[in-house]
Image (cartoon, rainbow, N blue to C red; front, side, top):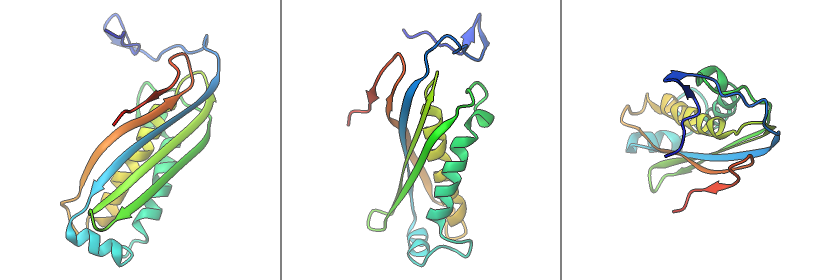
Amino acid sequence: MAKLTHFENGKPKMVDVSGKQPTVRVARAEATVRLTDEAVAALRQGGVGKGDPLVVAQIAGIQAAKKTSELIPLCHPLPLSKVDVQLAFDPEEGLVRILAEAKTRAETGVEMEALTAASVAALTVYDMLKAASKGLEIENVRLLFKSGGKSGTWERQG
């Protein structure tokens, strides 16, 4: 069983990464927002009066990645060198697909930044479209890929 590094003697701790070598680290995460028919119609018309929901969600995701250490208690603040959030609207499937990527050169990884970006972008889609329907569902928030550091590269299969 893997050792949980954020605990010592049963108490939470911030991991000391000062002895690690900085490496280039990249992480990609995704989220999906399942839309109702009303929300699909609102998106097709360009939103619900607050602006383009996908553009606002893209900016929110980027901003969230930069604030991850303020939201997740034991995350290290990281000097992000790249955050990219892409949203794709699929009206036939009734979905908004979100892909977030974060990159840094640091002593610890950027998985939480990518996951936070995807999550907050999905929450923003919900916020922007909730006037059309409260029945939206956020699904499949998950890590797709990470590289860098001692553990190397990991990629989700399937």
